[in-house]
Image 1: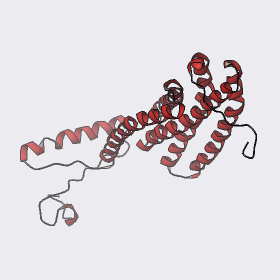
Image 2 (image 1 turned 180 degrees about the horizontal axis):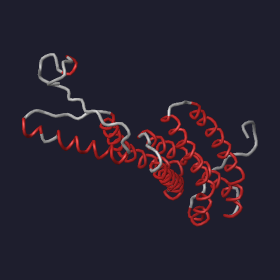
Image 3 (image 1 turned 90 degrees about the vertical axis):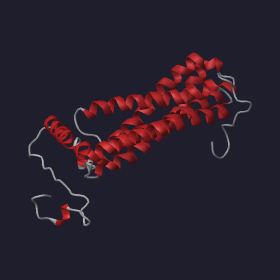
Length: 247
C-alpha cells in the first residue's frame, strides 16, 4: 500500500492498510505451505515491534480457521450426543448392555470411515465438512441400524428362540430391513456426484462410504456381540405381534 496508488488498500480513516502477497505460480503443495509459513513468520513479529496488529488472511488461513473451528464444534457435539444417546437407549431397553451394542456399532463405523478419509487425505485435499458429515451421519445411521437389530433379537428371544435362532431370525428380518434402508440412502446420496463442485462430490463419497460401513458393522458386529453377550440382555416384558395390517 505504500507504493501502490489504490485507495482500496487503505482504510478510509487511515488506520489500516492491506499488504497483498502473491505467490509464484507452479508451487507444489510442500513449497506452498513453506512459503505461507515464511510469510507468516516475517509478518507476525511486526505486531510486537510496531505495536500495531498484523492480521493474516487468505484462502489458506480461512480454511485453517474453518478446520480448527469445525474440530472444536465436532468434539463438543460428540461429548453431548454420545452420552445423551446412551442414556436414552438405556431407558428404551431397560438395560445398559443392550444400549451399548448399537453405540459400539456406531463408533466402529465412524472410526473405519475416518480411517478411510485419512487415506483419501494423502491423495487430495478434503473439506472440513467431510469429517462432520461422516461423524454425524455414521452416528445416526449406525445407532439406528443397531437399535433395529437388537430390538428384533430381544423380541425373538421373548418368543422363545435360543441365541443362535434369535440371531438368525434377526439377520433375516431386521437385516433385510436395514439393507433396504442403506440401499435407498446410498442411492439418494449418490445424487451429490452429479454436482461439478469437488466439495459436494467429496461429501457424497464420504457419506456413501459411511452408510456402507454402518450397514456392514450392523450385519457383522451386532450378531458377534449378541453371540457373546446375548444371554445377559434383558428380554422385553411384552412383545409385538407379527400379524395385522402393518406386519
